[in-house]
Amino acid sequence: MVVDEDGAAPSADASAEPDKVLYESSAAEIKKGKLEVGRLGLQTLMNTYPDSEYLAKAKLGIADSYFKEGGTTGMTHAVAEYEDFITFFPFLDEAAYAQLQVGMAHYNRMEKPDRDRTEALAAENAFQILLEKYPDGPIAEQGRQRLREVQEVLAEGEMRTAQYYFIRRADRSAAGRLQRLISRYPLYSQADRAQWDLATIYERNGGGAELSIQYYSRIVKDYPLSPLAAAAKEKLTKYGIAIPDPDPNALARMQKEAEIDRDRP
View 1 (spheres, rainbow, N blue to C red):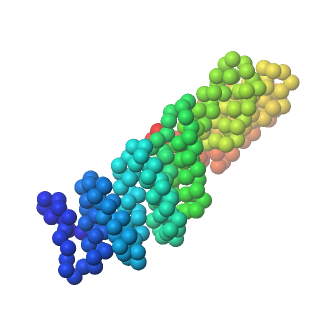
View 2: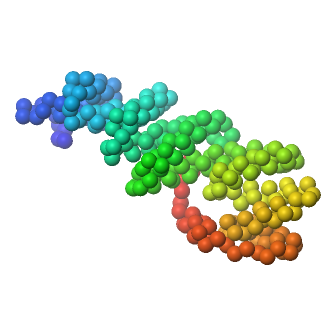
View 3: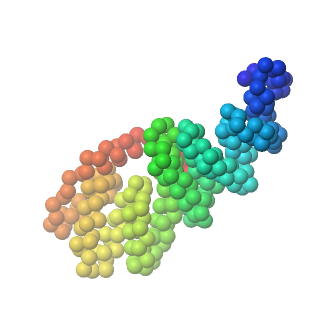
């Protein structure tokens, strides 16, 4: 689309379809930051030309404008508009993008690990839906990375609470948190530490050698590059247990993770 040098929207071409002209002029307004004006134009297009080929683009444009606006109100409207888009246009390629943006709207409002988890849980759910419905392609890969980041925050919150109980020897509460953490977030960056703390809890309460061995073995097998792996091997040797071989998939995963510079929220 050609825009005048002064940034004005293009003048209507007499040969152009009116819905196309309205869409392009509204999109230009949004691009310039005139979000309300652009949204009004897109809404007019949808109301005036219900059979327009630009209907889906207009709907998505409205959602994007709210996302660009940001803030609590903007993101709330963005989520609603993206979800409407998915409902009305589930088979378009852009539906995957809309689902990603639902997750990102919640992602952008996440609190710190020890604060309210509402937005983080909503983001986790949105990204999981994305990967279930649209498992392939670059958008799925973005969603997979964001899901990891969200789950890191959620797991960190669980870990901090578990550590609080662990240090104070409230072992039943600590064990419950740690078991839930390693079950739900096995890829959490401190999952090996969670396994170690569980083993320690069973050791210091007596009669838990079998369970301790189980968690030490998991560290060696599932987290072979962990700084705790050597200590876990020593524990297994002390109990007279054969040291398991590292899981090849776990080893490859940890090597790959070490090479990737991931942003953390």
